[in-house]
Figure 1: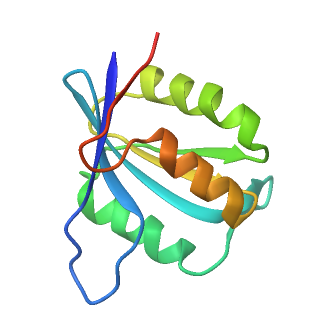
Figure 2: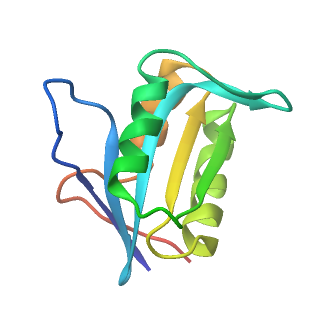
Figure 3: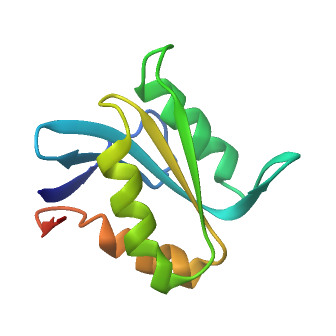
Amino acid sequence: MRVRSYRTPQAGPNDYPVYDTLLGRKSVMVGLAVGYADKDGIRAMSPGQEVIDRLADLTNDEARLHVVSITDEFEAEERIDKVLTTTEPGSAILLLCADSRIMDSTLTLLNPADASRTIQ
């Protein structure tokens, strides 16, 4: 299936990395932040909380937030493909990347703008 992502219109003056990501006919909201998740919760660097808030604004109250930790750019594609194919339409996905380099690599996999890629 083809993956395409479009930057969501921003409600305010800040531009947070939140995308409407399409996989076939399924649409999910995907946000990116630098941080990690552990048993105590989500630890995200600024603007991580703003990204989470924006995901909440763009999904309905019943939508689940799926948190995916990406610690290595080599595992990113497998983790993203898995969450995109198993997540219910209308859900929100927060991709927590270990650092900005991994976040940049992860964003490329979402194919922002008019690019697209195929998931097996």
